[in-house]
Image (cartoon, rainbow, N blue to C red; front, side, top):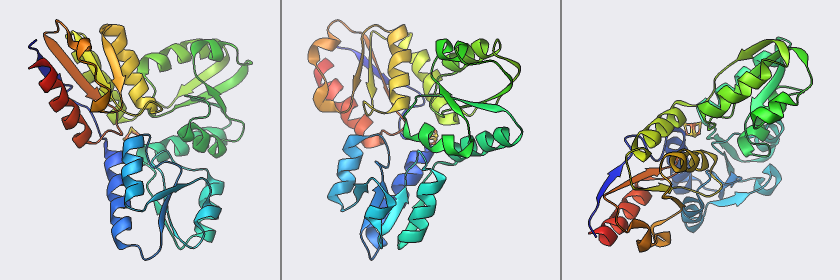
Length: 280
Ligand code: SF4
């Protein structure tokens, strides 16, 4: 068995995740009190357990971190959680990605201007949950069918979970056009997401096998796996090299690798090395 391996031109840890990891590593080294993250810092279980080994634990409320240092995760937190954290904690470090903050700001602006705010995204996802309180009355829509079922209103303002696919956004907006006289769209899909998805599609269209690395609950990794599967039926979503099955690569000439925005370069390198040893 011999195959070439190619990594997507844009893959792996994004600006927001690298920034958050730098902040937590610095805090773990310098803080005189215990360091916690409010929810998992990023949706990558292997990175989160690596942080636990350095003493950084996950808490589910600011009250559990009273008197300690608390990092607000990349996905953002609700304004109420942030207020309680600042009241109770020794120090609060805000690792909310600046692209997520843009979603909050856009949602708040649209609500102030009288739009019925629609957040295109996954209901229950931490980023979406943190966005909703910024726009009172906002609703979450995940698909064109859900958009078509919304009650009619005068004007709808749309913001988008940063990790949604543009294809889904376009379908939802097309459905919303029938629900209001005015539909205003602020496309808040982040640059890293667009870049990763474009590079993933370009590579998946040419490969025999695609391997997508990232947390199973990571929204942006799931989007990459969906995009890759549509273009390359032999697509596999894994969290680490130990999940690779040698039979996946039978007869393959080109193996593509991509990785979600919460996947550090070291995890991509480990998977590449493991695939090399299978297909050599
Ligand atoms: Fe920020 Fe985008 Fe990375 Fe999310 S995927 S942390 S929004 S840069």
